[in-house]
Image (cartoon, rainbow, N blue to C red; front, side):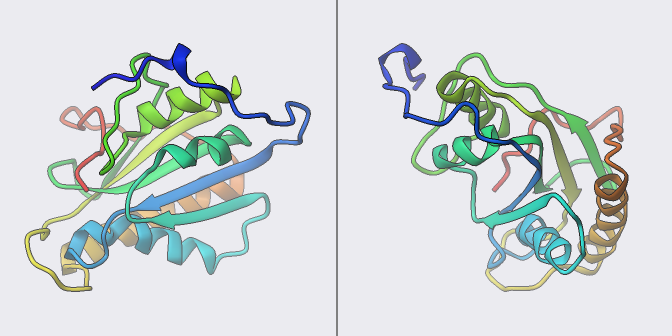
Length: 181
C-alpha cells in the first residue's frame, strides 16, 4: 500500500552536517543459506582497511535506513540474488517515486525515495546482487557456488571502494531490484 509522503512529518536534521563518504549495507538472512551473502560481504569488508567507508549489516532494509543513507555520498546495497547473473551484477539505482513498504521489507529504490523525501538528500546508489543458489533450508552456511561468487563480488567492490570508481557490471538478464530476502 503506497504511503502518502506529504502526510509524514519530516524529522529535524542538521542539513549542514558533513556527509560520510560511502555506506555499504549488506542485508539478508544468514540462517537461510545463500540469503546470507549480503551480510557475508559486509563482514568481509569490515576486515578491510577502507578509509571513509561505513559498513552495516542487517536481515533486511528498513525505513530507518533512510537517515544514514542520506548522510553519505555513495551507498551500495549488497544482497543475494536468486536468479541474477553469475557471479554478480553491480548497477545504479535511483529513488522510487512511489514509496512502498511493509513491516517485512523495503526495496533499495523505496528507501532511497524516503531519504530524498524526508531528508532532501540522495546519494549515488548501487545494487550489488550476488548470485546465490540455495535458499530453502535453514542453516548458516553458504553453498560452494555462492562462496565463489562472493569472492568475485568482494574483489570487485573492494577495488571500487579503494579507487572510488563505481562502474556498472550489467548482464542482459540482470533483474531491476534485489528484494529476494
